Amino acid sequence: MKMKRTTACAAIVLLVVLCSYSLRSFVWGYSSFGEPDVSGMLASPSGDIIIADEDIPLADLPGESGEALSAAIQDQLADLMNAERKNVGLAAVEESRELSLAAETRAQEIKDSFSHTRPDGSNYKTVLTENGIAYSFSGENIAGGYPSPEDVLSAWMDNEGFRDNILNPDFTRVGVGYYDDIEQGMRYWCVLFVF
Image (cartoon, rainbow, N blue to C red):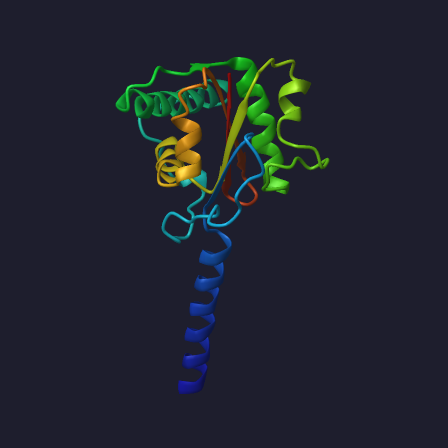
């Protein structure tokens, strides 16, 4: 009896460890000044098990669904980034619908290929040209597993590379995209910056 109890406890502990390892949140930022510095680019906010999105209330969002909720979440993240820029004396970046559509495409793509390389092998910047977006310089921040705009922004601001993109004084426009993978219970984020 004692052996069965010990084995059952060990199995439960192993299951919890495996679940928390596989569901950790991660972020990765990139700027088109050069190749990404992959060392230290993966981060986990706390290592906690991620709760399904439908069980997590999103702060200060209207009780809407569909496109209105998506736009509210995108606007909230853009507002939070602009607040960070204002805190250091920078001008706000203008949220662009065209850039947000490109960012939404990238958020869906990183579900299958968590990288600044798109699933077809091209660089993330090709999503900009495919959407007719003119730019001189671009940057991309991506993340997975963070349930709210506040959580993902906090993770990005805690990392020098991601923070540099958010606080780059040259960026003038931003696009915000996210994708909810209901099957995996994960939310994927992408922010595209341009000037």
